[in-house]
Image 1 (tube, rainbow, N blue to C red):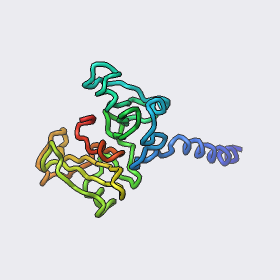
Image 2: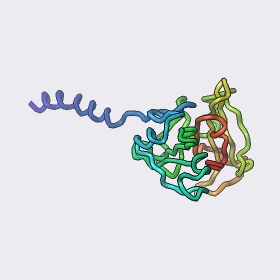
Image 3: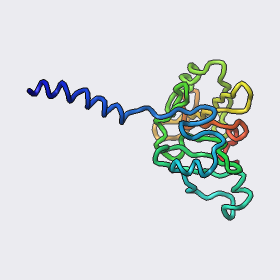
Length: 193
């Protein structure tokens, strides 16, 4: 009797466990699952995103706020922030605050992956440039869509076990965060700047 019970229950358990371990959507030039470039603020807020940080503006209606601000902290999208400009999604950032390690690009690049591994995935499509703040201890790995409208940037850094930047010649650079969307906005170095 116990063997028959196990035979019937085991497939059911596997089915239930599989439902809980579904893979997250992957970042593309134009979106991340339900988040798509061009969506409105109300559409993004319906996914659980909200304004949680201040910015250079005096109040929400100020021109600087309208030109650029972030929505973040969605429980369904931990570690993801959405850049808004003129009430439209223009960029999606992964690595915002914490809990971003489980997100990937469409081709499988993710936080913690080495620069060498990312180069192996994208080959000659990847443009490598020096990180604006880390010199030789970091890089920008940039992909651009064939029409030049969209871009994706992986930021890398060479850090020791305590998080201190060390000589990149002796340490491997790993992805610390990445972002995608409209090319001009993706190239902003400091969020909305």
